[in-house]
Amino acid sequence: MATGVGGCTGEDLDPAHATESEAEPLRLGRVHVLLEPEADQADQADVDYVDALEITARFAFVRGLDEDFVRARIDMPVLPTEVIEPSHCVASDTLATVDVLGAPGTEPQELHLVDAGELRLQIGDEPEDSFEVPVSLVPDLLPYMTGFEYLYYGDQLPSALSDDGSTAVVVEARGSQTEELPPFHAEGVVPLAMQMVVTEADLRELGRGALVLHWIGAESGTESDELVTLRLVGQRRGEPVGGELTCVVSDVGETRLVLDNLRTLGLAPNADSLRVTASRLQVSQFDAGDFVGSEMFVERRERLVLPLR
Image (cartoon, rainbow, N blue to C red; front, side):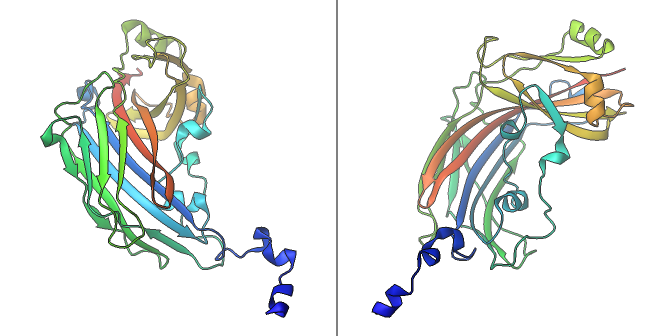
């Protein structure tokens, strides 16, 4: 016994010398609620946009894999607002920073999406606006990836959805049958409606090489630390052309972007219209057993299409 203790040098106890398999596993948890009302200007794009409600939930236990790789694999990316400076745009495909075709490293690898049991979501106070989110077995594509994810897609928004940012969102999960994930409760709020508009003056600015957008700002047009994510893609005869751009702007009710700069980044120069999708996000955190600091995103999207020619 004495010999065994004496054989443990400081180097052996240094966490920096632990192998990947001995390191503390990574746990990532996220519930994402997306609400997108029907676009007011859908007829301009020759596309039938309808109300959309999407709910996804994933709880990943990870060992021996890089976090960026895992986030790309399970569709749990970092937010654009965390990697793009306000008033800047990038090509959307550059936000995927890792190769998702193969996993790095040679240590034992594990990516297990944990079962949270029955998961139910309530939006507002009306009983009919309670949704049970179905569980789905993850595709058996990789030998080290197993488990379950929660996916719900609907074409109707809650009947009591408010535009003023007062609609509560509550998630309840019964927890897994094992001790992997206990029951949990998480709360959020549907963000304020943006109500994007483009005025005749804004359309004239397009002729001068500037994209100008207006909406209801987070602080009614005053200074705000809040951010809005914009996704821009050119269209020609109603079909997407060129690359998509992702921009982050201050949520002060208006923004002005230079079209030549956007075209340099990949916006199609031959586009005859521009589809703009704006996202406002409410973020909260909750703990579910060892899944400490899990995220709850409630996202409200709006879109419009405006002519470029």
